[in-house]
Image (cartoon, rainbow, N blue to C red):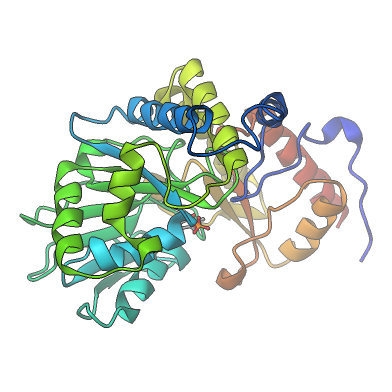
Length: 369
Ligand SMILES: *Cc1c(COP(=O)(O)O)cnc(C)c1O
């Protein structure tokens, strides 16, 4: 395979386009260095770290315009641990899941493996489309992902009209980059390593009064390991704490990104920016002879994760390998999808000018393959 050297003037200033961990802005790294001898390496039970957590909680409530009564929760373990917690203290007996890709099916798997729950109800759609569950008798929790990171599909988020049931949204790669009406959700959960450009390892959630009530109800009657106990999370989050030691550096990176987004104008600004970046790619692919958007329905195309399908005569694996050699990294497709694709994250940290440079770089390489 011949290597192609992309001229420096065509290259993006930052070559990181991964869907998570996503590019960390230099200002975030600087913020980390700035507290390198004060907050880092100090007790998470004392004011400097507790205040940091409190600022994140207040900032998230502000960013998402959380109504009165919604609580901002956090706990160690990332979104995957949230799924396990939910099998104990959010799903009463039976959940329903929309799945059209890798991440939707993971929460289903956690619920299916929990022997105290009934077999989950599953609504499935082809990768590249969206699956949103509709009311089913006996289901007390409805779950789907707002952004399916494996395929680049953005699903609508509207409360399922089923009295007493909770609507629980996986916003791991959506929160902070896609618009949301939080009143349409009972739990809107995510982690730091996507739009917030922090590190992984901590999950955050906005929880409605109904969700808080459900947690308290189930925790009073169902045992859970302490590390997954959501009633403990309610208590600790209220005190700006976590059960055990959190990664303080993740919190610092997270807070820097949150304040940056808020300072620029909040979620409206962030979603305009991700839309601008992703539209550049979608429009380019629509006009390119050898590429097209993987997601056929423009309404479902994600503004934060763009999947581009390439014609067979342009081997994407060769393309991504050459791009990687030029410092443009993590545009490989989701491994289990197994298609001739590129997947590009356009989270708020990605400058639209870098997306234009990425397109020029792709064109330069493809012309020489
Ligand atoms: C990345 C991702 C996850 C997994 O998050 P972890 O914090 O690594 O557990 C879950 N759901 C979606 C939609 C994701 O994009």
